[in-house]
Length: 116
Image: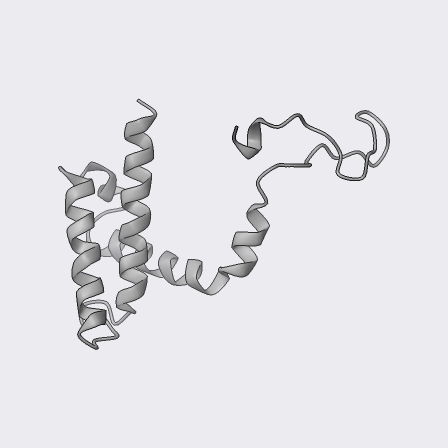
């Protein structure tokens, strides 16, 4: 069972329809990710913007064999990190941020495939 499949209830026991009720007990807490990983997510957002300017906005979604190619790109960035190179010479941004972007692209494309 997924977290979002749990029966809705108020975490403070306030009944639905009563003042102050908020039926969010057991729901995904996106704020934890946004606050806990704010710097990392901002860096990945910068990589997204760089890619949109270099290629096209949303064009990554249409790349043939995207999962395979983004996996290769992620591994190239990881190899550079392993070799001691911190910044990507093309963007001037962290290789780790590029690797994270590629991981998210792989995950998104995989989830889209699964939902077909």
